[in-house]
Image (cartoon, rainbow, N blue to C red; front, top):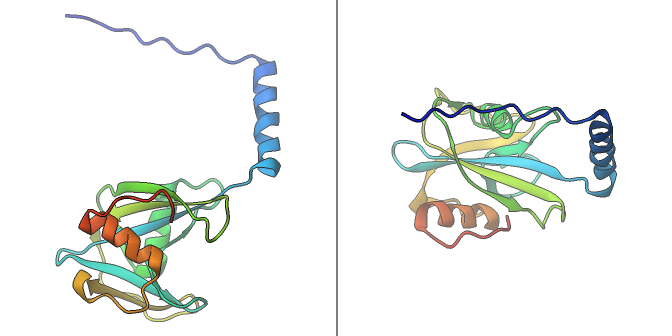
Amino acid sequence: MVTTTLQKAPRPSVRARVVSRIITFAALFQRPMTLGVRGLVIDPDDRVLLVRHTYVPGFYLPGGGVESGETMLQALTRELHEEGNVRILGAPTLQGVYLNRRASPRDHVALYVVRDFHCDELPKPNHEIAEARFFPVDALPPDITPATRARLMECLDGAPISPYW
C-alpha cells in the first residue's frame, strides 16, 4: 500500500501578498470584465424554459449577472428562481463560457444545463419578466434570439460549439 502525504504550500510573504493585491486592484481598472450566467432548463418532456423580458424584445434563456461576492452557481440559482420560479435540485452541467461581443468585448456568459429541478408554477408577468414558458424544441417562438437559438442547437442538436455568445 502506498501512502501519500500532502504538504501545505508555504504562505506567501507579506511583499508577495501586497504585490498580488496591487496587481488585482489595478486589473479592475485596466481589464474590467463582466460575467453572467444563463440556464438551459430542460424538463422531463424535453421542453426548454425561455423568458421574455419587459425591456428587450425576444425570448432568452433565463439568467443574469453574477454579483460581487457571488459564485456562478449562486447567481444561476438566484436568477432561475427570480425569472422562472425554478429551484435547482441536482448539480447543473457547465456547458461552456462564452465571450459576449454583442454586449461588450469584456462580457462573458457561463451556460449551464439544468435537468434536475423543481418548478411548481411559472411566474406571473412582473416588472422584469413579461413571460416565462416551457417550449418544445420543435415549436420554439419565432422571436427567439439568435444567441439562444445557437446555444440550443449546440446543446441539443450537436452543432459545433462557438466561443462567442
